[in-house]
Image 1 (cartoon, rainbow, N blue to C red):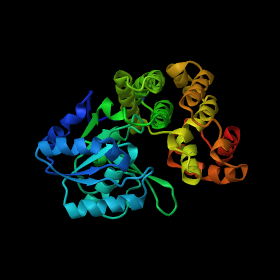
Image 2 (image 1 turned 60 degrees about the vertical axis):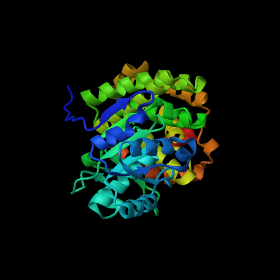
Image 3 (image 1 turned 90 degrees about the vertical axis):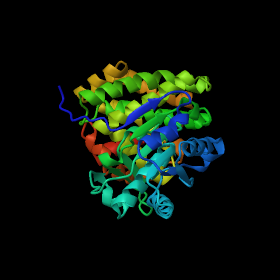
Amino acid sequence: MLAFDYQTRTRIVLGVGALTRLGELAVANGARHVLLVTDAGIVAAGHTRRAVRFSEEAGCRVTVFDDVHENPTTRDVMRCLEVAKQAEIDFFVGLGGGSSMDTAKGCNFLLTNGGQMRDYQGIGKAHSPMLPLIAVPTTAGTGSECQSYALIADEETHQKMACGDPKAAARVALLDPELTVTQPRAVAACTGLDALSHAIESAVTTKRNDVSLLFSREAFRLLETNLERVLSEPDNLEARGAMQLGAAWAGTAIENSMLGAAHSAANPLTAHFNVIHGFAVGIMLPYIIRFNAQDSVARAEYKALGGSAEELAARVEELLRICGAPRTLRECSVTHESISMLAREAAAQWTATFNPRAIAIEDFEQLYELAL
């Protein structure tokens, strides 16, 4: 039995129409003046208007920051912070994908603890209490709603910083499958691949334990089965709810086990070639599975998920095809000349240290070559 220290920090509320409970849940957690952090697409879909209405009907004042960008940077967080300070808010709601939730968390760090985002890189560096947060995902992808980390890119270096603290975790994760119906098919595909990669990677890291494995395996079961259903039956709320829950369970697994080399390889691809994160990690994942399969423990965990390591890698490749994702790095404009630089950056990523099989720059070079 692998040792663990597990404490539930986030209440999960799942159900069709659950957004109507936003105001009720905010007030129950002490909200008076909410900063709703979201993006322009969520505003256009009408979700922001409804979230504001439900919050105001419960007696909350609401200020909206709707200028979140994909892969938020330190500059995005500072813009959000200016709004939060001016409004004198006492509560956060992150409405959208992982970018909205991470921006809200990043802003929370700086509003309550001061300094800059780089001061919080790592875990447990917030010295003062943080404001309550309700996370409302409109995709089934990052699992940020069940994590205490904010992933924020440095504006100058473009390197992602994982800034984590138990105080940053959402008080409530509000999962409403109806919110995911408006997302384009491509968004459902890339976020679904991201969630699936979380389930697979978290199952084999060196930090995995009996708690994380429960969540990894159940997340994989839900995601692997329902990703195709959501893409072929976009109005299927049962499948969408299963995807949301799978993404949340995968996020919970990450919170207890971290991630591995597929994410290390994906982040430089996003930073330098603008490859959408879900597609970047999806492209690299089959090669990482085959690489890790030489480790006996990883090989056994892959088998527990879905057959042999080769069968699992082949299933990921099949889902890439179904999702309409790029299958090679060359399709993403990656060149042979860039591989050395990508490999150096991948090897320096924090998640590489948790990979079940030790991985060096030379290994990343070979993996990128295979994926090219």
